[in-house]
Length: 109
Image (cartoon, helix red, strand yellow):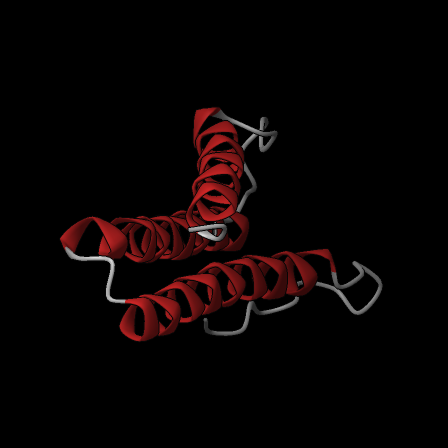
């Protein structure tokens, strides 16, 4: 993600930290997908074995795109009145929880 221009030297680094957090989350979820894919290559569980890795890729892409959108929002001047957690934040949270459950179910086989 690109950097966010700071408005004032005393405004803190909240926007930069937020952009880094979205990137970290996206890479972490993508890493989960890669590990699931590597596991499936060694266990050859068929096409359904690729489903958890595919889900991880979709969640990582969704996380990245929402992070980019929120980054653009933080760059807008003046800032919108409400920047709180919207539906997209809840969607990512539910998606990560679902991916965690799918990963846990895929591992014991």
